[in-house]
Structures are given as C-alpha cells and as structure tokens.
Length: 250
Image 1 (tube, helix red, strand yellow):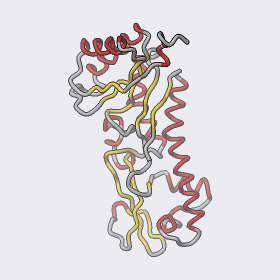
Image 2 (image 1 turned 60 degrees about the vertical axis):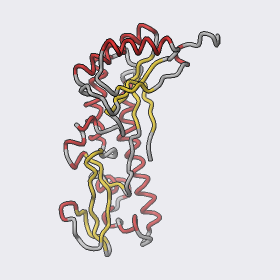
Image 3 (image 1 turned 120 degrees about the vertical axis):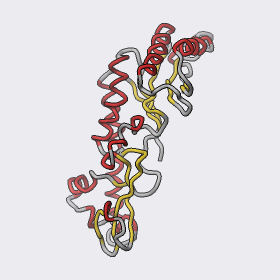
Image 4 (image 1 turned 90 degrees about the vertical axis):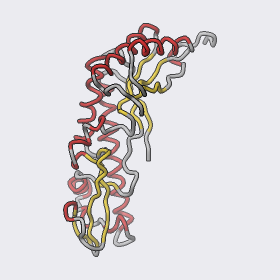
C-alpha cells in the first residue's frame, strides 16, 4: 500500500453533526472540506440543535447534496438511523403510537396499587408494568418493523445504491430494571411450556427454582432483542446491499 495515498475505504469516517439550520450550499462545502482533509466518508448525524425538520423535504435536500458530492469525490456516505439516540423511536413516531410500542419494566409490590397495568399476583406479591413513553419495546418484532418502515425505507427509496449503509446507535433493552414486553407471556409458553406469570417472584427473590427461571427469562430476552432488533435490521440492509454498523448500550 502507498501510505502517501491511502484508499478512501481505509480512511476515517466520522460522525458529522447536523445540529443547526441546514443549508445545501454549506453541506456541499463541508463535504468538500472533509475531502481536502483526507476524510474517507461520514455519518450524517442528527443532533441536538437541529433546526431543520428531521426526515422532511429540506432534510433530504441536504442528504441528497451530501451523498451526490461524496459519490463524486469517491467518499462513503452513511445514514444515521435516528434523530438523536437511542435508535428505535423513529423521531417519536414509533413510541408515539402508545403503550404497546413503548418500553416497559416489570415491577413488584406487596399490594395491588397499579390497577391499569397489573399483570398478575404471584406468591405474596403483585406484579405490574411501568411504562417509559420516551423509548420503544425493542423486544417486539412489529415495533422494530415499524421503525424500519419509518426511517430506513425512505432512505432506501431516495438513495438506493448511493448510500454505504446505516449506523444504529445505542439500542437497548433496559436502563431501569427488569424489562417487560407484551410478547413475553406467549413467547415464554412457546419456548418452555410454562406460564411466566407463575414464576415472576423468582425473578426478584431467591424462591423456588429461581436459577432456572432467571436463566430461561434472560435467554428469552437476549434472543428477542437479537432477532427483533439486530437481525431484523441486518436482514433488511443485507437484502438491499447495504451495510449496518453501530454500537449497543447495556
């Protein structure tokens, strides 16, 4: 390799913060400046401060300018799949559909106080789910399918063959305790021929066969996240000749 003229594919591809009112002229100028500095490509990353409607007409005018200029200069243009992070909420359109699409946590209490979200009573305790309305259920395949439809598909329709791929940023299962999903009861029954509602105390307390229950539960959670989020997006990208990169959180 000639280290005085390294191919673009081996050069840095940084996050490029889009955090103001976007301008096509400025977008083209910045791509050209990155090229002069030896940058190999970029991720077009919506961040705090953005004053242009995310995924709107003006947004895509700037994406078009960036992609066209990059292709002309031999650089690699990548999309970033969210308006901020963690990825998955689709600029609020996915979690905005309601509880079924929102992130949930399993909670235990001694008396039944949360009637609207009660799951069951197991042993001496009542169990309910607590909702985080600001993020999505990454364990439910239909939720992530909608995320793909809202974010990935518009990019593909407009830039097929001209985008390198997508960066997905910090998708996660839980920041605040044991996760819950409306798919758990049916999925646990399918996998283990057991009713998860009869074992919820074992997820919190060292009762019964809690070691087995916890192993089965967390294996299910891991598999659901892997298939509903990572594999579903990977398969979508792979089928269309696009790459997927990113990193996870927790």
